[in-house]
Image 1 (tube, rainbow, N blue to C red):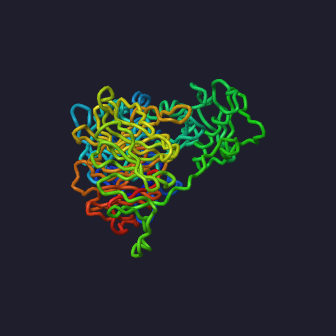
Image 2: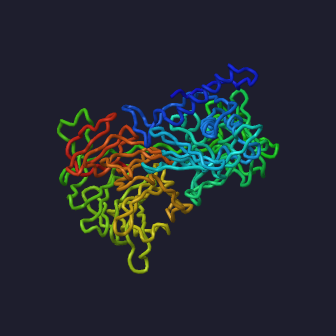
Image 3: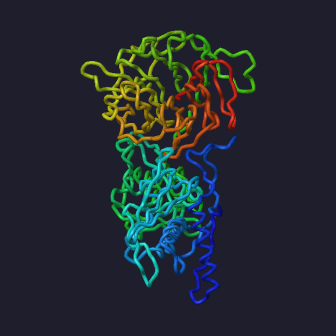
Length: 602
């Protein structure tokens, strides 16, 4: 289906032009109700490409106004399609409404992505109403979160009509109705972008990703950046832009590539706070392709920094520290009790190279590798604790609970592990161990509980810190093993960086069942093995973004665990028969035998 429908407003004084417009509208209605090719629910990644591609200039789409004599069904169909117009211009869509309805309609409310595999149906209802019904692929809420719909999900909306100058117009529509667009229109109209906040315990930017309309992008991003951080990051981050600030003119002007941000509120006086404000806004606004630099004014006062020339084009320019990249330890694979460096597809047939780590018997399961690759951790054979393996020595960690989950090292010197507390700590489900110091000469540190009330009565299967350790993805289930789900939460740390608690959870992959394994692929994406709820597919990898979007990869028969040696292209799956598979486009290539693959701080 063409994404462009260009048609001038019909000249009512010309019968031929009216007939032409009517023919176009009828064709458009037919296309709407019959459907067109769909990008699809949980789109499958193309071979050899990252899931997210470039940012091409979207094709502009313009739709016709209602023609004389249009039926109620045609009015509904025309209104729905006109809601997919480019540039945030909804005047054509409002022309299908009465003046009162046009004023009350919130075009930028919830977005429903309707399925084009089955036709939308408009059914008249007496006396002057019609019901629009169809299958849906997902929704994007006013919070910018994408939620995939269940495979058979549908939705219906009732419209009421009145005659204006003897022509049908929609006089009443549900308050929550925003727009219905096709998945084919999605990339043209909206795209996920990243907001940035400052971690509470150190000067590091923490990302949050949401969907935004692509028109007036600098204004939309700035407006969102001025607001409070989302609940799932509360306590883990701060926004150093003065609370309650708003855009002075409710917009950001971009002139010659420079975004001019003018906001209300108190002027930050501390140098560090000013640097943080610059870092947040510059990092966020530079995602707009039209923006090459930023200036900021607060209460008509230019936000200046010593020895910094305006406009600001990078966060380094204002002195905001950049977290240095760590050199990770080499990935290892366990074969029997022995540990080897993970081979690549080019040397899989060569003799494996011992990693230098001590042998770890197969009865110890769920291996984890430290960020520098110097040590490993594993769950003890009885499942009631964990051990560290450093040099040639095993170190049993102090007892903290039962039903221990998969341990994980973060990049900030802690081992994270789930379990079930005992006695007075029976509601505890999450702990960390400090890895500072040499276990050969220092007493093993005790487990420190991490508060998370929302994990009470749950079983933590895996907890995976993000690359910078500011958030965790938690795979947890009911105590009997049912109702497995994935949640994302910010890590609340002390000023010294010790984890103390988690923020409120943000659910990811709500329509996935039987998730197994977690791995961070980037600051804003994770991967898991799962099945689509209601589907018949085998378990396969899903790439899930913080904004809620999901991408599917090729099925992996008997997939049991997932990790990655890098990003989306480097995903590794271990199967139940004991084979390690490496992603190669839409194929899975064998890296030979292996029951566990351990990647540094993954």
